[in-house]
Image: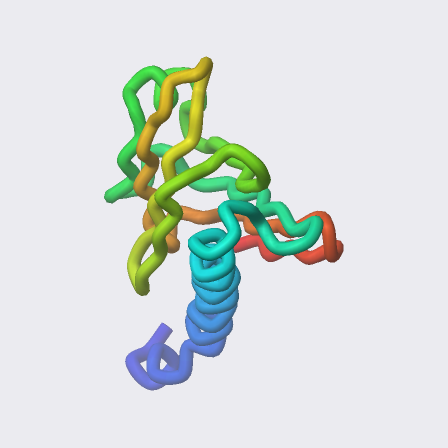
Length: 122
């Protein structure tokens, strides 16, 4: 690719816009969850992410159990959900042990909300 072809990278623009959809969806749940303690309606998220992506912070035993990729579900039992332009954070329970996960948005490979038949794959 020449320098001129690198200028208008529509594929990168579209990916960035779609990651913005993920961020916005998570932010809406943060706002809703803070006031209700639950997800809105029947919504629930399946989030698959690359466990070896730079900036992913998960316990070593989870990284060992899920080398390469891991899917989490946000539906009933989660807390401390937060999102910004770079990453999401959430506390989930694994074998009754709460664990804080930090996931860069760029590490997300699949985002789905089956309640409305919506999914994105990166």
